Image (cartoon, rainbow, N blue to C red; front, side, top):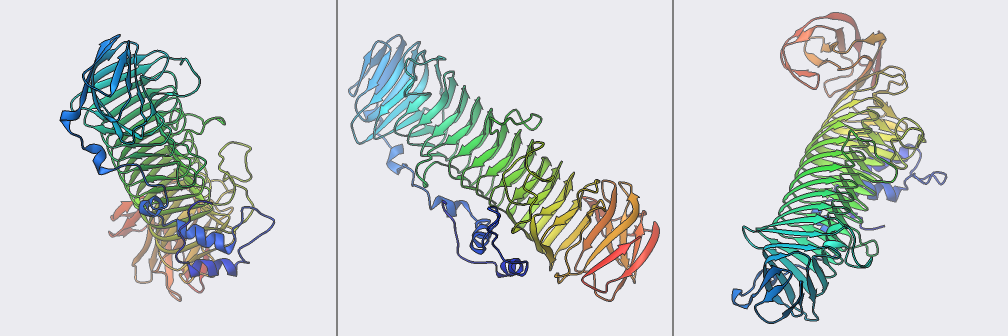
Length: 592
């Protein structure tokens, strides 16, 4: 396995796991050992700096961006020929060959020509594009065959255009309109427009850095690809691709094959994944508009991935603004995923946010307006954030197995194996609202809640529940209200230290019916209006006290402030009192 950051443990979570029968199960490959669980929980707190420190350093040096204008060699492109105004380069017909390191400035057009870099020098080669238009019908308009490292400079206030044909004269390298076998940097305040008819738009077979510039790519396959790494430090990038948008695909070295975005504006419409890294995706900031596989209104196919952001190992987002619409998962990691901040508007044909192993949300504003399953992983830990989830199946799903939303597929309603395993949902803060067609909070294992607010509008079908757990639900703090059907209704378990109530009704209540609880002095404890038909309500709050009596009403209204069906403040105008209960144990059942 690649990088895991292990510095501490969560004793309470592990103790609860041990109380439920140990951590291992040799008969189920998806089960966690104690070390697996400890490691997974720890990975929910990964930051960009944590993961970046374990990857290969990039090739950037301060001196890359400094050169003497007196040393710049001017090259004028004249349609089918070129004029070289100095040493280090030659022109033969419509082909310009750079033979020495240095800085070269290009202007003009080539109607069917090419810039080739082939030098044994150990210094950088800079290609300044100063308003060029280059067409090459059978190869890459810019082909960096050999250099210590190369830089393409987009001169200020210029527009530069590269395009190729639909076939190349060789199936070997190059395979992109702007192609480099060496480390490549793109820099400047100009514009680069690429029409890639053959394959990729921009490819480096080593590392690729985009420092700045406005880049627009329309590519038959991938938009921008750096094999060892792809780093976006800033810029305005627009990609329309038949394959992936941003991509890094080194699958041989565990510290390579990563993507890091520091800031910038990135707009991608991709046939496959919008952003895809073989190992890690790290986002520090930026503004993203990502569409994959035609968007959430389309059905993902078995041959395409079509995810918004996909990482093979670690996916970490510290900040940024994201608008994502995908036919597959919107945000996905094959191993670990951490969201530490940012603003997300997500519409997904499959899962909104998915990690195969561990998933942490430690901040940010997340609005999943459409999904099959909203947030899914073997281990989910939420410490902060404002989270809204709408799902056709489970809202928050903790289970083991492979991601799938297709019919048939895996067992149960949740897209995962239905067997119980040592999987954990840990809520230690934040605001979580769930509107689920299936289970609201679903754990093929354990739920533990210590703080935060959770509101669930669960299923209307009796085959699912607003809360569904296999190995226990331990609540010691926070506020929870979960309305749904009664066939599989559950409340937090008896091992909790905070008191809970499970109300079930003899017949279903219509959507929009208020449920109100007040104490013996008439103080409001709960005023909640579910958005769907419901027959049960699970409720836990620090205000519930042992030995105290409470009255329950349905209907009526409140003058308080409402958010997600939950009222605060104001005055309750009574509906119908249906009964009273007294808290006598950790879980009180009220049937009416």
